[in-house]
Length: 105
Image (cartoon, rainbow, N blue to C red; front, side, top):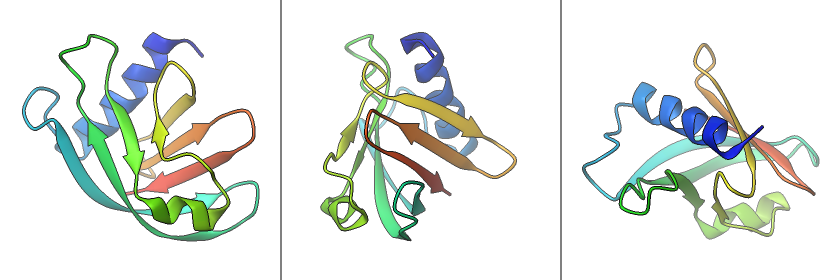
């Protein structure tokens, strides 16, 4: 999946959650997290960063609780990860080299 597609997936999720793409720079939302590799699950705060000034699309940042799910990163950008959004489940899936997790809103 390319960067443009990843940006579109994050934007679909933001739109579905009623988050403006051009207003607040940071938009915290509570979500359920499921780590597809370790099968760990629980609640987490997801911060949607609009990043509209840079032109490289929005990205997400998770609080440091993410480490307790076995994931070492907190910031996930469309240039480095793959994003997929399922509007029926309100679920955003994030995949990288060593991890894959789903956020349910």
